Amino acid sequence: MKKLTLLPSAALALLLLYSCGEEKKEAAPAPETPTETFDLQKQKMESEVRLPAELQGFRQTDIYAKVASFVKELKVDIGSQVKAGQLLIVLEAPEISSQLAAAESRLHSAEAVYTATNATYNRILETSKVEGTISKNDLDVSLSRKSSDYAQLQAAKAAYREIQVMQSYLQIRAPFDGVISARNVNTGAYVGPAGAGSTAPLFTIQDQQKLRLAVSVPEMYTGYLNDNDAVQFKVIPLPNETFTAKIARRSGALDQKLRSERVEMDVINKDKKLLPGMVAEVILKLSAKDSTFVVPKTAVVTGSESNYVIAVNGNKLHRTSVVKGREYGDNVEIYSDSLSINQKLVKTASEEMRNGDPLTK
Image (cartoon, rainbow, N blue to C red; front, side, top):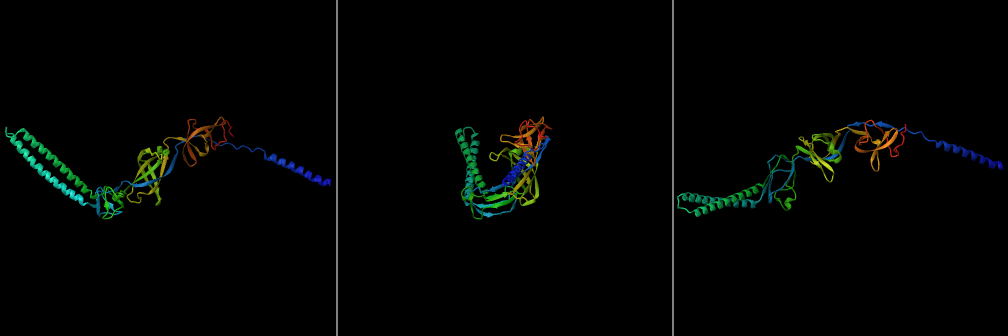
């Protein structure tokens, strides 16, 4: 019985010794991996950014009726190609014709009155040249009557021209060459500057031979743009085609809500592949004007208070604060007055690396 109890005890002791040996083996420190570094260099970083944009007619306007009237005749419809000055719609307002006739009658009456008073004044003036025949007061009264009748004549002419202008509004013509893209009235409809007839335009006309491509560029990219820079863009209906335009206009100010600058390009569209209202994807090439420090993204640590890189000074690590610029691919621009060309930086930095830590070789 004693032998049976001793044998398991001996086996247990051997097992404990073996396990202790294994723990000692596992606790042995692993060899340190060398820290990879690189020499800091400057270069001109070229990147691109893709932004949504919208195509618009270079000239586009809604056409409304100036006077209260009824649609008498429509000369064009949706899709009609029109030339500047072409008649689009004829309106009808009988009261304007009556007003014009009344104004013309008053004009003729004023002309007749002025003709008479002017003749009377001229006769009195000639007679007054003979001394003692006409008193000075009679001459002044005749001159005053003539001046009053002349003023009445000018007022009648102005009123007549005003009614003529109002009547000309009954014929609406195209302000420029373009295409009728919308029509909101039919023959007989009431239109005018107020009321139900003014809620929608009669027509919308667009110049589609030349389009305006408008894009809002975020603030951080505005410094890389220049007038006449070539810009490429694509549209969803034509995914295999890439179009080119040049920057023609910049707003020169940032939108207060979007914090972006409106940039416009002129697009020649003689083949009419592109339509106003299309959504486009603009590809902006951003080329730096000056050389900057460019490092791998892994070399920059984004901390809670600032961004920094790990510089190597005398085989010691040192955190150096930087400002990040553009990112493109695996690289990023950095800005810092504490860095210099050919300075060694850690390629893969981390928050565990502290100031003064030795460089692992």
